[in-house]
Length: 389
Image 1 (cartoon, rainbow, N blue to C red):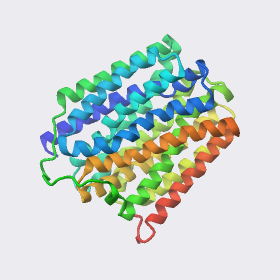
Image 2: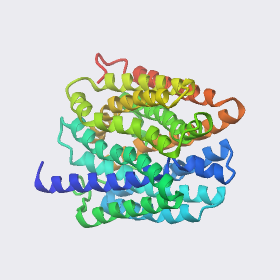
Image 3: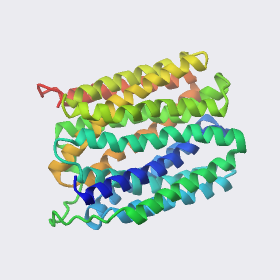
């Protein structure tokens, strides 16, 4: 890796860590915060889904424009918008205002996450996609992992408003890091006009399987992020700090496994890691409602973390490989995040509906079975290959 690539790599990792740390602080506290203002299960699902709805609508456009105009402008603008949403949370004392703030935060996420992934994918050496994307994911998930713990501690010690202030400050640090240290990188290596439409991205069998898997896996994530805090608060009667630990635990374990399993994915067929991780995640979701205390749910979340650590480096590496073949990394990563966003829309709404009409048990068990469908779809899409990639 050359000197410029090192600079880009470090700046991207630090910027994304700060932004994800800020996001992670608020996310696990939000369901209980919304309940305080009278939110029902379905309303909580809508609050969480609004983030992904706005992100989903903008992703195709932002990915395509970034392939033509460059990456830095989107990353810095998105990080600045992240920091401003902390003010939105401070003044959001009604459900519509919370939905609006989450919608704006979703716009910021559409500008930052897929474009940072695309930038990282472009500087990744051929044959080392797993190692490089695993290291990037280390910073990405590391911020999300540390955020809920920090948010729970800050909230218990100083109140909810302090958590929002902390989110804003950390996101602004990410903005300054990108503004000062991230160089612009335009699409100069391939001056051909970018083709219109996304149909060509659905022709390769590998990509079909990846998108199906990402959708179903993200539905499970949406269920967990929106309703694990509710389960911990209403059923297990846990403190905010303990709920923060639970949310952080699975992300932290996944974070620590990103680099080693990313390196393994460069040597062993990546599809095996994707499938095994998906099965483990589904099993963990199904087990959550049957836990009876903090110790039991702690170990179930530990299993959930291992699943993400095994699956995500390999899955991201597969996307980078396909993006290099097509030559439009921004559009590719936007599609990858798009299916994650759709899953994060469906997951919370599905969870809100089932929790109100059936039970919390049905919510988590249903999310687990949807995850198994994703594994099946991924495997079927790749079944003609002698190896799972």
